[in-house]
Image 1 (cartoon, one colour):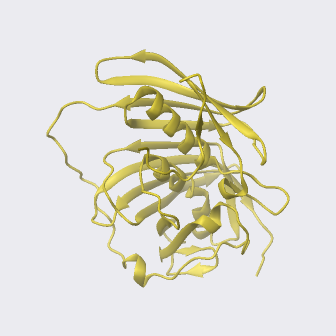
Image 2 (tube, helix red, strand yellow):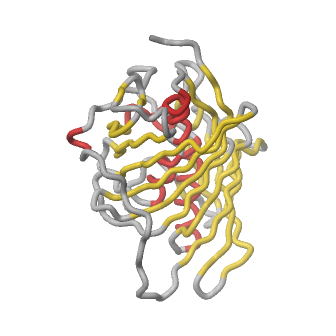
Length: 271
């Protein structure tokens, strides 16, 4: 049986085409102007790729071209131009009707090897149960943020302040789905799209951003209830910013790394 996902990806008669109905639960934005969360586009594409190729994702990168809004349906067309003994090179085109919304390129596969090491270590911080919960600044609602629990271990996020992150542009968030959904590559792809949420923390301003892309590189998926997202805003210039994220299991296992470029937006103070 296929494990439940954060989104409702559906198969068609064509094994290379999938579709995703958009509901508020996979979208973000102000009331009346919701749009699909970028990480959902990457995560659903990873799910489509893994099911089509029957291989785990190694890396995947999404380029965001436009917005998709509920209650539209996003079609996911999978192309596999190269499939070898151990890995496949593939891509997904996500579109609503004739309008292309995003493109995802990826590699999938696994090779027989006993080597498993990591050199990047998880930062020292309080466990999630000792960290304050973050409420999203838009408050209630039934959008994506209502389905994800976030606790702040370092920095400022969602009005919660857990220590200075402005000095080094670093934000530490514990994240997990509120539903009984495993933290796998598709869920990590959604978490990876929280990079723009660290812009305000880094600048010391009420700021965020819109993702231009989202890249994830998967090392090892292990069972964990929470993922520690070590987010680092690397720099801002000319209205754009660049950031990275390192995603750890609770036992310190490095599961994935991620990176993004984004449009920086400074908002009016909502306090």
